Amino acid sequence: MNIVYLKLVNGENLISYVETIDDEYVHVCKPLQIHTINTEEGALIRTTKWIPFTKESDFPIKVNNILFVLLFRLLYK
Image 1 (cartoon, rainbow, N blue to C red):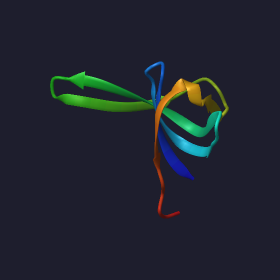
Image 2 (image 1 turned 90 degrees about the vertical axis):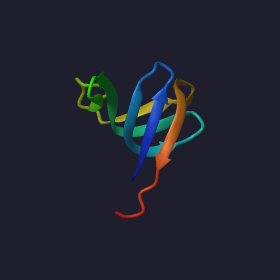
Image 3 (image 1 turned 30 degrees about the vertical axis):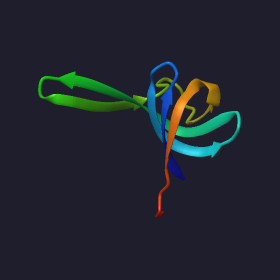
């Protein structure tokens, strides 16, 4: 399974496993939302579950809600 970075139109940044990408949806599995915190010492990054209070792990995201996608292909299993 490959990893994808998504920038959504609402400003959220996600990193997730990607199941499929088609003309209408990007189907992600176990998405994490990326939060950046700027401090005097530098930037910090933390992640949280994108939708925290659900047992679901697979989510379809409509492509018109996505600004851009970076796909990382894993070369090993």
